[in-house]
Length: 462
Image 1 (cartoon, one colour):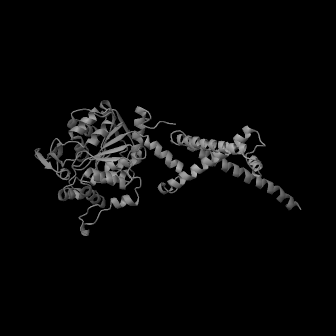
Image 2 (spheres, rainbow, N blue to C red):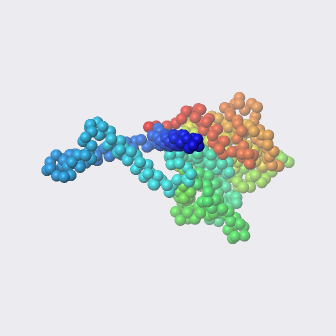
Image 3 (spheres, helix red, strand yellow):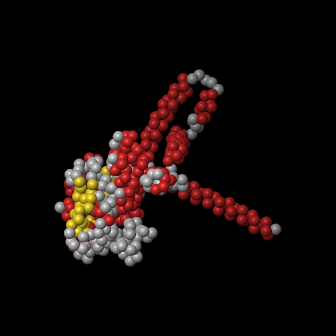
């Protein structure tokens, strides 16, 4: 008897808990759905258009029904129509009931329609609202131009693409080694290697398609170690008749958010003077891939021909940029070949954008042995004959063992007296001689917004 009384007490309590849990879940779901009305998503304006359209349709239908109702003779369906129109209630209450029910139908139908249309393009497990919010935020991001080449540039792009869609990578075409060099010599195309790396870094889906694009055939396969991406770009260049169109089409295949542009369309070769350690005489080295192989310190580099025309869209991107980033990357063989294109260097000097220099984490054998942060900056300014950087970003974590022949790029004690500098832990724990993409990108965006404040481009916050 006691047990039955206790059970009878538990049942209402369980029902109350279940009811409270259901109400709590409904409230949380309702609050989540209200996030669709948050500023900046670009949703409210179109929802208002839908509501106005539905209201006009409703008014037109109401006028037609009212005309029929007033002019129709006495029939059996008039009382039914009167009952369905809730004539037994006050008009304000009827307006609220019909309007509220119609609003719920419009919102629910719009929500389900959007989910059905967006489903093929959504990442599994990622809510639609989060995807739309992130896209809109990146769409309004600053216009950033990154200048360089090699693995440093692609690593930086991989981090920056999470902050803005308005990214442009200006890439060197002086590469003459490996697969790119062989295609350049045999097929007469510009070297696609660095451009391929940047395209894959900017791809929205760096999974299977990107891995395929980066796949390198073995030497025994008869393809001489070429990557599939290099062959793909070369084939497109032959089909479309232009290298720049091949790069653009490759970007569409990889669903790239941003642009990858060559610094010039001329067939340029990088040449360097190196001072040997033994007899202090200058040796002239021709070819980007040969420069690091010769022992000695580089005194200067230049392009042959020495006055190539810049690719016009690259110049335009620099002039329209909010932020210009030089580096990271091989100082003499990836960064300077871009800056030695006269029109590009003049565009950088003329641009009103904020200009950052990202100093390398570690030295590069045969190229920047023993270089400090100040050596990197002064080398660039020596070749450009002008001071251009507003801020220098350096890595300060230098307590990890590096491979033999590689050393940290040390921060000069007096560097802060000459330049605005910022140093932080920027290394990749897995590869400490390289930057961590996410950390570096976050530092860049924080420093940029600290100087300029959030930018509002074409779209204004609703």
